Image (cartoon, rainbow, N blue to C red; front, side, top):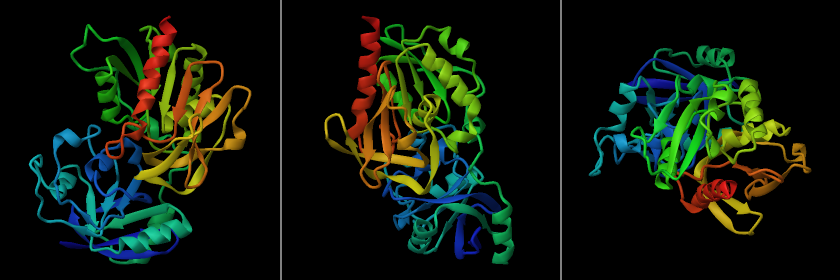
Length: 366
């Protein structure tokens, strides 16, 4: 195993050992507090442009399998863990985490004090980072981290979107109850699995599509997916969503989709200090006062003071920091949440949000 260095733009650096891959990788260094689900995290396109540190100390013990993939490959730029489990054991496992990372050209680093990394990010904030098995001088890597491209202002969602529309399920279901147009900003497959489970036939479109092309299929509802990066850095996607809102079809957005819908309604976004990433965030539904535990993965948020109260209202709050976690339109069948009700990984508490979207489509038909 090769020696590896982790260097941050503020001059801080850590030493570890590469358990998978080699070379150099750049990204914003973030942490995720989930205890399981490392494969789903790695294949979540929302992690494009980020290097993920897992706070749980032992990672890799149950291996990897194709059923748990959330996209077409690994989108995280690299993985940092406290201890990599060289042995894995699970009846579903098909290969080791190390071999999976290497097959996707990614670097995995362990034998690192991930508690120190997490505390540093919590204190100083998420920042640009480079991980390397090639350069032995940490100060050289610090300068590389400083010179690298960060997340602010980048349209990462368009970097990860698909090239052409496709159907889900691929074999069209003639008995599907609803037709849903899905805008792919970095979608996780479990969102599509849930729609299929609820009787929907989905057509997934690139986020570069024209609104007229999306609406030409006469969908019962439109879904805006999760995705990576700075929502303010994707004005073309915001414009698309503005045009879809004008069509007054039932609309539902998750995470980046929530941010796109909010910006399209005139709100503003801001960058969180170290983001929300994990499977244990408490959310309060202000409509019922109930509290649910939900999966999160975002580094940007919507400014509550920028929301136009004449057309929209806040429906959900993150109870850790009181940030906006959900919004709905007051006149149109439109709502969105900042977190991940599809889980994978995470709790299933917010599953009801998909059912609410189904109800909106049902009402729109009557």
